[in-house]
Image (cartoon, helix red, strand yellow):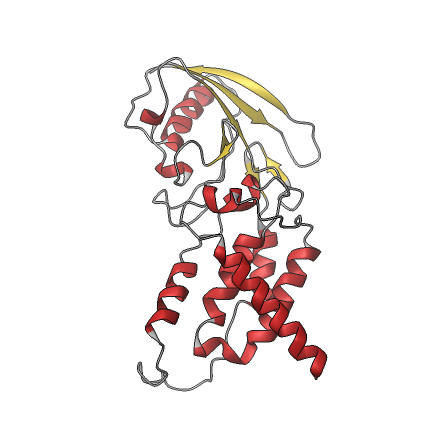
Length: 249
């Protein structure tokens, strides 16, 4: 395959950025998108040019690091992570635009790399449970109803890639935050912090500068792990419940 790549290049957070055009040839349809970028970078290195900086780690679709907007879509045309997107999803001769996540809360570090530490601070504000010290508790000491366990597992699949933010026209992090809130709030182990968790995590999300949610649904469509849009409505119920309880006390 022969392709034309238009890639966002930006030296650092303070430098102006622009799209640069590169032609690549000999691309196998079985390559992943990141392997295709590796091929380009090998050529740039040999030619004495600066390789394109992009985030990656596991390359198995489980770490959420490979945050790319490909032809205007978070992670590209398939509902998967960029590292699991294969070049057979494109046609020979295609022109492909590659950009970083576009959100005020995700500042560009270099080229296609963005700073997603705002997600870390949201989790730090409430994504934990009270765990007594000492020996490990009996595995069945706290029964968990099957529906609650299924819901918790569904939300625990969120890998924090940020595709929901990149796809949202408002740059909202509601789907990510709701996944982290609901994952713990439906479990008995998460009950002690149930109210403070949702209030603190939503407050931190707002403080990070993410946009408001208008339930357009683009976040759930782009999510590679299939976190449902109903996750947001469940978190809204939790937030209303918590505010009413706090106001009574």
